[in-house]
Length: 354
Picture 1 (spheres, rainbow, N blue to C red):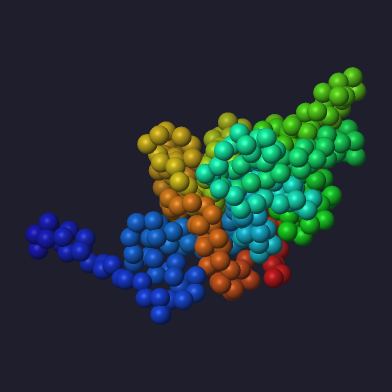
Picture 2: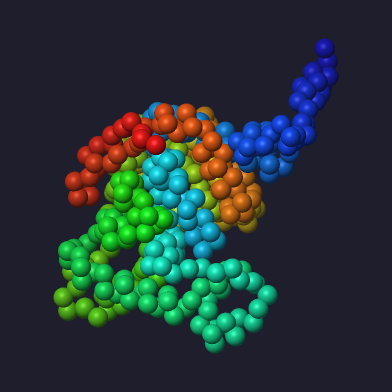
């Protein structure tokens, strides 16, 4: 057969299958049916497949990069479920998401608002706007006071953000808190831009008021060393990025950092991303996994998938579909991190209890 005819036959071999909602009613079934549709629905199905593959891998440690205003956007409980159901092992977040998480743990709320409003009037009313979500600025100031005073309760030394957020998690009672859930599960949280948030604003006031005898601080270079140890001891690694920004870059840079420290880079073995950004603008949030290969961040054999969709749509759909995979979650072992200060002694792969 002519070479072009063979190619033509191959390219026209797989038919688009129209979604049958009478047969496919669960979230899991719908996402699986997306494998035979087009555009971002098919990409969402690919993310679902790669996510299941990394969850099924008995050796993979999963890093979750969280950016964007996901907590104000109503995704807080979704992330708590991911922690409690053992879907992720390490969380790297913006400071803003952790701040808003604490804000809600204090009994405060975000409110359904609108983006069609006079923002000068909102400023007069002391109401802050996050697109179409409102929050009480007066209560934000009250929340800041907590972080101004928190160092008074802590041992005066320099903390990695993981150590600091563990201390914060101890003090949160709300069972729906991300930071509390991570503390209870022993899941490490890193926040490389913690100063760029209400948490950092409050801590900076403490530091400014205690210049003469300030032995408290956050050492972000300790974060690098702790993250490096996790990557070294992990048998394999998978990554799940919501948005991009610093959390994505911080996880991505683990492999180049291994090389600089004199270790062999192994690349992340699984990688999925939910983003609304585009690679052509040159920003990290839209950067493709193909581009990441040039840095050694992923390898040719890495299973990757990217879906361009609002994370407030894509994330709950993926998590809901995985929640229906009962055996997959039941069989996944928890990754328990054994720390001695900032030294990671071991990662235990323990039987999961759901």
